[in-house]
Image (tube, rainbow, N blue to C red; front, side, top):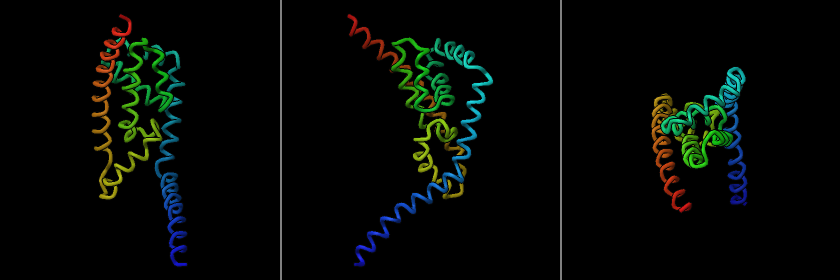
Length: 173
């Protein structure tokens, strides 16, 4: 009988822990997330979708901007998974590299801009929990992680574009 009681207590304990985590999110990050999403949507509305589209087309002309700033803007403004729709501004041969860059940024951006990918928020909070347990700020880690992420997505985008061009040539010959 004691064994069954222990199983039942541990089973409900899982849900108690989940509930405590949910309350922590509701009083912690969720209000920030909601305000950030509202701000981003208001900013797009103020700037105008046409201007955002024109700026996106200008960004895609340069290979470095195409795989650094352009995916950053896509992930920041449209969040994951809608950010991949920014690929519409690119030539067909550039779309795989853009996707590679954008999908590689959705985690590093989360520490600074949690609205960008709520699915990765749990990974970030897990990583950052060690620092918060020690009473340290997570911001230095978030900034470094973000900057390294920008460098990595740029490299990945350029390399993927070159590989795509090589593979495109082989299939058309």
